[in-house]
Length: 183
Image (cartoon, rainbow, N blue to C red; front, side, top):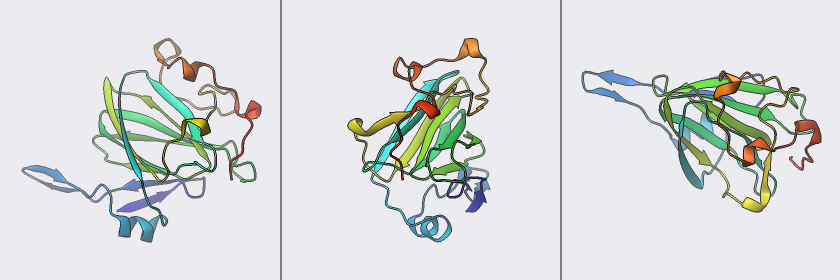
């Protein structure tokens, strides 16, 4: 596996080693030992999967302590623009984001440590998106930031008239309006 560092410490892009032949391909999508050697020590406790159509934007979501979550995300079918925003108040990269395109063809994965908000936009007709979490979901600890916060300057690569949001994601506060209790 190849690890690509990003401008936000701890946020990495993972490119698996792909084995191709006439039958198709094979790759290891997760190996605990290799992950801990190259990225960080972690224990994932929950796997999630979502299916979405073109234009859907999910996010920017996070879990507040003590239920904060690290996530390892990937696309099984289709393509997304995946985004991580540093919301750790004392971080030198507070308010900055990293965006990476994850597709069924590039097989990239994106690791987002605790203390970052996460979201993605669907660039393909349909996407199947999977992610591992290192803490269980706790609805009472949900937090979110407006996907279109102008201070973040995220280009979601979806025309404004094509954006599809949940009712909940339409009403999140801007980062500067958010009360953060994130380590």
